Amino acid sequence: MTLAWWWMLALMPVPWMIARWVKAVDAGDRLDHPVLARWSAGGTSSGGPSAVHSRWLWLAWALLLLALARPQTLGPWVEPEQPARAIMLVVDVSRSMEEPDMEWDGQRVRRFQAVQQVVGDFARERQGDALGLVVFGEFADTQAPLTPDVEAVRDLLFDILPGMAGDSTAIGDALGLAVKQLRDQPVTDPVILLLSDGENNAGELEPMAAAGAARDSGIRVHTIAFGQQRSGDFFGIMRGAGVDVETLGRVARETGGELFAAENTDELARVYDRIDALEPSPRAGQAQRLAAEWFWVPALAAVLVIVIGQHARLPRRRRRAPS
Image (cartoon, rainbow, N blue to C red; front, side):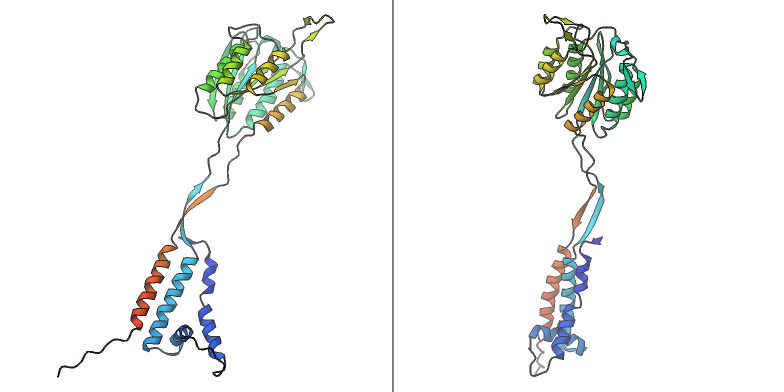
C-alpha cells in the first residue's frame, strides 16, 4: 500500500491553525463561526458535546485527507507489448556470390562475405522483430522460419557457403517460398528483403508471378540489386552477367516496396540503413505498474464518521423518574 499524493497529509493542521487564528482576534472584531467554534472546542475542554463533536470532526478531516492522498496498491512492473515486424531475408547464394570483387575493412572479400557482414549487422539490430531466412541459387531453401531469435538467424547466415544451392538463380522460387512462409503466419505488415546479384534463370515460378502472390497476401517486397548491373550495347542488346535491375524493380513496385542498388560494400550498408529507417524496429515501451485505487474507503469512512458525529452531538433525553 502506498500514497500517490502523500503530501496532502501536510494539510492536517490547517483547521487547528485557523481556529487558533480566530481565537487570537480581538473579541469585538472576531467573526464567530459555529464550525470553527467546534474545531476549537476540542482543544479547550475535555468534555461536553462540543469537545466530543470536535473529535469526530478531526477524525473525518483526517480520513478525507487520506482519501485525497490516493492510497493504492501497485502490481508488478509490466512492459507494454509492442507490435513486432515479420521480415523474411531472401539472400542469393549462387556461385556468382563467390566473386572476390568487394572490400571490407580494407581487405578484398567475396561478395557473400560482404553480404554476411552487412545483413548480419542489420539482423542484430532487429531486436523485437521476427526474422526468417531463405537462401536460393538453382533452388530455394528455408534456412530459418520466422523466429524472434535474431541472433540465431544471424549465425545461420554465417554458416552458409556460396554455391551450396547451385550455379543458377531462381529468384521467383525464392520469393514464392518466402511468401508462403509469411502467409502461413499470424503476423501484420509482413516484409520481404530480397537480395540478388544475378537474373532469374532457374526454377519454376516467374518473379512477377511470385510478386503477384506477395501483393495479394499484403506482403511488401524490398529488392536489392547487388553488384555490377547489366549493360547494353549501341543496339540495345543486353550483355554481361550482371544483376537484372529491371526485374527486381518491377517486383518491388508490384508489391509497394522499393528497389535499392549497391555496387560495393559501402553502398550495401547504406541500403540496409535506409531499409532500417523504412521498416523501424519496435522498441520496448516504458515499464508501467498497474495501480488499484482505494481512495473510496477512507472517503466512505469520513462520511460515516460525520454522520456518527452529528448523532453524538444531539442531546440525550433523560428518562423521567416513575411517580
